[in-house]
Length: 188
Image (cartoon, rainbow, N blue to C red):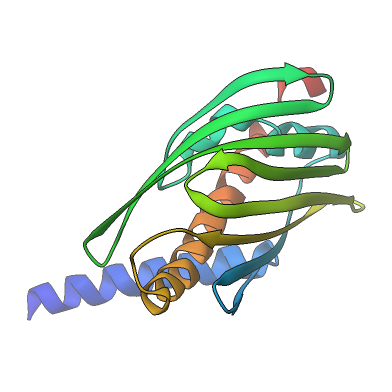
């Protein structure tokens, strides 16, 4: 009985924390699929000024602090274009999912970032970040489309993507909230 109470407490505590993140930061994660192509749309807001918000989403190597991203290294910078090499390691119902991708990020402005896989294990992956300054916060809007090239059935991938996307963006919100108390040096 004691084990059940502990498990219930842990589950409800994490569920309450998740709801608090969603409500206080207006986190909205939507995952849809059109055939084999996934579409992810996310928005949230954090009490960051425009400079810190942009520094946060362009801190490419810090992405390795998100669950599942093992490596994230800048390969090159050329003007507003940045090549980033990423290794993603995860498990889907016991099946290993290891992806390597090189993404080209284009810093279009201090409020828009677009990215596209230039080589890697996905059939394709592309998307954008848009930052909307608010009175005392910044709204982050993320959208992406991708198609994986894997032997794992689409129904299993669909379940995995929907369930892990929420958790990963909750982690991003938490990391962005940490910037509130530890702003980037370039923004001070």
